[in-house]
Image (cartoon, rainbow, N blue to C red; front, side, top):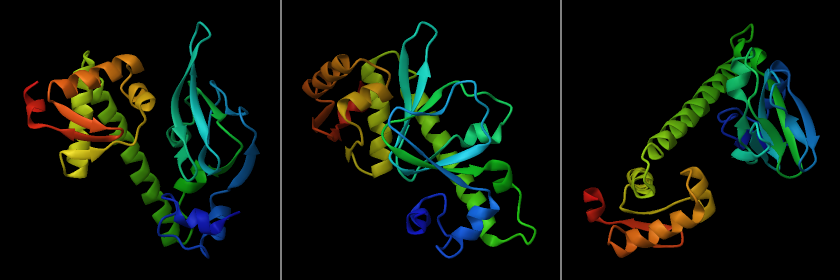
Length: 223
């Protein structure tokens, strides 16, 4: 187990490498490796563990009634998933978790994590605070996405997202973390329609852009 890597993750922030082994025993951790396309959890499973990606990455896959499926989320090395379901162990998963590549997952028992040590150790409290912070950020990101896709028009969805990015980066010029396909998926629109709308917005003087670098012009607020 790579203690240096774990100490650098958001979940174990503020906990030293020397403290982590004891912490892992306290919260009943176990590791498991998966091959590409192997299932970590299936829809209908009940989950009691928080999962941290130690190597590789996983996809959250929603399977629809008629046989089609869609990737709803993606978690990279150092990120956690399943914490919401682990906190609500009576709820069944509505999606599959599938290895996007060869990966290693660290499973941590939620009940043990939320049960304070007998001596009320600070590192355990720190881990709980980190988990709450991560969960709060995820909820914030989800709420922001729901706000962006509330409009029916692609233009308004883009303006909503670009406005948020401008505010976050403190400048009307900003860089987005998505490719065109990823941005289309994030905003729940067709990629070709998205690209066409971006071209129209640039022609109308609302934005200027090159690859992932955008400038939100003043005229955007009046569109």
